[in-house]
Amino acid sequence: MNLSFKLTEPPPALAVTQLIEPLIDPVFISDLHLALERPATLQRFFRFMQVDAPRHLELVILGDLFEFWIGDDAAPAAKPVIDALAAASKGKQRVFVMHGNRDPLIGHDFARATGATLLADPIIADVVGTETLLSHGDAWCTNDLAYQQFRAMARNPESQRGFLGKSVDERIAMAKGARMLSDTAKSNKAMDIMDVTPETVVAALSDAGVRRIIHGHTHRPAAHVIDLDGVTAERWVLPDWDLDDAEPRGGYLDFVDGRPRLVLFDD
Image 1 (cartoon, helix red, strand yellow):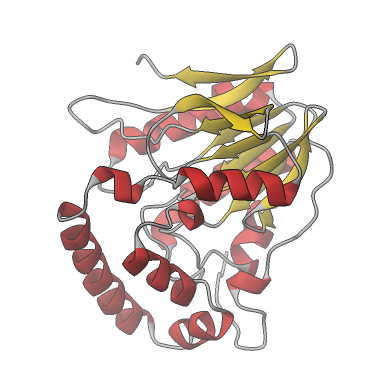
Image 2 (tube, one colour):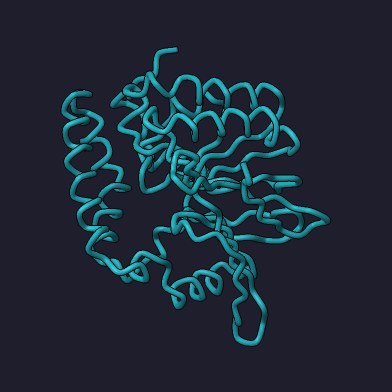
């Protein structure tokens, strides 16, 4: 497998689809942050792909599958993950991947290698019969002004094209520097600044004309009830994964009898 970015290809931000066929029996995950430095999390992902995911017709990954991604041509260590997703696609499971704040550079070659469809963020989908707004969720953390400026740059097609046109070594050095700045900034921010802004979520629901949102990013798995001008709406937040932590965590969202269900790992 030879993954490489070609300057003649659309950058990742333009490689996404804006439409998605109805999801009949999906399972949702996000914020796995897969990396070689997190072996237990990697192993739990492979187990998930062998045991949990095959029970469903669709697998939907709402961002941050990887801890970082600097281009489809610079991820040889990700081959087992790519192979696992490709096996799911070949097994007739529909696989969808949305960009997260850690991996907005997942592109055409990754999609081709895995058989996955890259999703726009946000996107409206019929999920088990209910129109639902799907997103990674970071765009709704509007109180974090510095992050929103970075997000706009990181998802700008021309910025992506410029970054991917650099050598792998240059990209690695730039990514390490950005990561150090990000970690420092996070340590100085209040937790509520890094959470979604309630007013922004309400506006997103209203603009989309739906009553359900599913997203990740905040690492605060929960089901929230929202009063949308007298109409009840739902916000489902996916869990992050870290099986290497002193307090291991992870999980997914699926549907039972047409209703969403959060499943948190107990192993």
